[in-house]
Image 1 (spheres, helix red, strand yellow):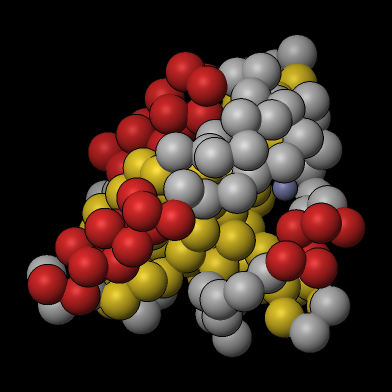
Image 2 (tube, rainbow, N blue to C red; image 1 turned 90 degrees about the vertical axis):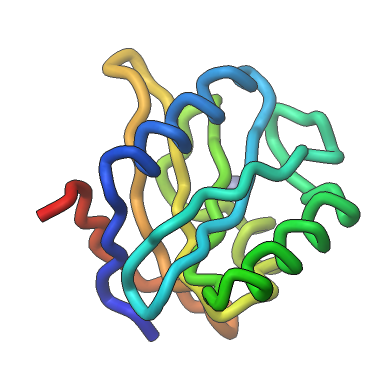
Length: 135
Ligand SMILES: [Zn+2]
């Protein structure tokens, strides 16, 4: 289990733009890197095209996994958005968590977008600190 995930500003902004562009639908993608360091954001289409649910397009997800492997990186996170504002992992997120990586959830309220990190495993949710910046 990871307790922190380090995200460079460029990748942070790329995620935020992606989830903002797709609101009010949920948006999603993968984070590749090493250990607790994000190096690359891979955007994946939300096949569900829903404001309350995401299902990664299987073809794009496979393509992203191939990219990660061919670049010698690992899957270190999965991100998606809650445009309606829920900051925490939903019951569906907990039930459907399939990979032992950090879940980054972007939520939207009157102050704009914010993101929180979670480790979801065996029905349990633990907070993960997101450290943003290049330092
Ligand atoms: Zn969710």
